[in-house]
Image (cartoon, rainbow, N blue to C red; front, top):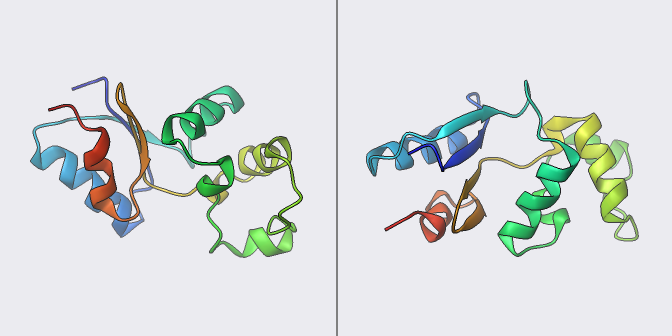
Length: 118
């Protein structure tokens, strides 16, 4: 099913588990290894909107770069966060599954079930 996309890091066990969950349900998604091919600014904005959560929810807060770049500052705008995430794609949380029904961060992995077609 090519209308399902997973923003994936093959080194991440949670990301691998989300991909396995999709495949168990007969879905072969378009796989975007976002560390090699990061989403564009507009794509990342669309993904955040499709999750229904703030852009900050897509920030991988466990990365040391978050503190090093001062990204834990709640006063930062979405544009500033986008700049950082696009310059340093490892700051983008994963996995993210996008379907025509919306987008979900796969943490926990079962969250992606909310946007899978019936």
